[in-house]
Image (cartoon, rainbow, N blue to C red):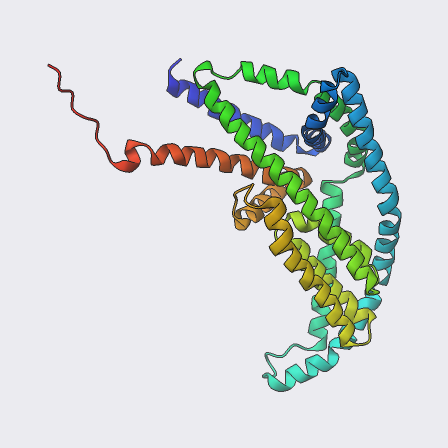
Length: 358
């Protein structure tokens, strides 16, 4: 088969795979989650296996320890988080009224310095707040119906551990089989790129997960210690969403200021909330992200945001999980292709030497 026909075949096969994944996106969540968990637990399973344990027993031990850790974390965090979220949505109308009352004097001062047509009125601010609250509720409903519907949630709870166990048990066999399918002439070069992809994904995911955990603890404890209602829930949500650049810190800042305006009676308390968020932003931008993540993914934040938005639009919550890994893989392949291009005659403009033979 000519190289052009082979290339055409694999391009068509890739397009068909993408189309199939798009139509099956509703059932992919437990399999993607199981694959991700197996990928991160495989090194630990390999270490236990080197101690003389069989692969099946090593897989059983690692999977059981992981499930126990998840259940313990859920038992500690979910009850207070659920209680705070329920109380927050119940108190949301009164909070909106309190915020508008606090902003009233500021709006009057602003209207005195602006033309009447340009100055916002209290009804405008109330409408904006109502639309923001409605947008948040609609977004939450979309996520719940698209990514965490009841069937998907049940499958995530019961199917993901099974998928994780079987993938983790057969991980080495799967990788060996895939290695045998590589074209022999280019096998070493492909392995090199796969190792680079593995280093990129593992370094970024572990570093970003650590950043999210640290920020969730910081925001949750910091906002709770200064007495902000629902500070724990807001801090945990902001920390988890920190894997999207600027979203976690922006949510913590806007949400905490809104809650502080509704709850506290003095601007000094609001300033304390702003200080906690500002310190969190400094810690994230100058300590955690440079030290734990660095340039492992080697993608510009704008491209990360685009990948997350595109993945969420195409595949919902599964797309959010896969967006950064897919973007990182594309980045590795793009840098590899660019390196070949920069070393080619097309870039240099060289012409092959004329044949001096007769």
